[in-house]
Amino acid sequence: MTKRVAILISGGGSNMMSLVTAMDDDGFDAKPVLVLANNADAGGIAKARAKGIATAVVDHRPFKGDRAAFEAVLHETIAKHQPDILCLAGFMRVLTAGFIDKWDGKMLNIHPSLLPKYTGLHTHQRAIDAGDKKAGCSVHVVTAKLDDGPLLGQAEVPVLADDTAETLAARVLIEEHKLYPAALQAFVKNGG
Image 1 (cartoon, rainbow, N blue to C red):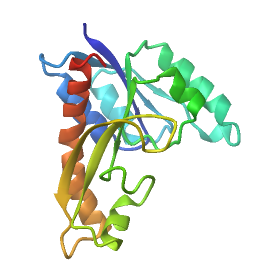
Image 2: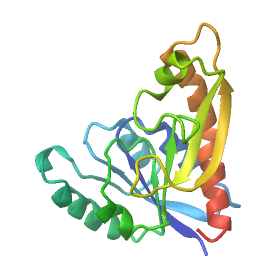
Image 3: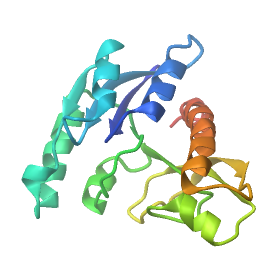
């Protein structure tokens, strides 16, 4: 059975596009049914529309101070498309346990560090500042604890002596675009 995937973004959607492109393959038992952004300026929305994928925007700003109301509208909007799996692909909102519990075991995230190192933001600079010899990215099942949950895969890149956060991020992003589709495909094949 082909799994229905909703992808949540906040920006340009490069990881979303890597997932969508991978799902175009006949051997991939999943298809994108929705790309949702939390702001109307997210460049990934136009990219998804160009691919013929349903899109939606649930702007978080009108809900300032009422996360529960934002998440209720978010859940309602997603549920209309009946996805089996949610993929967070640069969705820059922290979701509460109340929302995550509705998608328990069915929500994936890509994070730009070798978890459990460097949860949260500024991961590349933190790896450089710590003198790490390697950095990378991780795909995990989302739990109520930030950037936690069972790991589905990781990819490593070396930290070079002259790296900046930007140069390291660019190399990690190349690996993200490979890792996330592979992890989603494995998740689907394993009954996810």
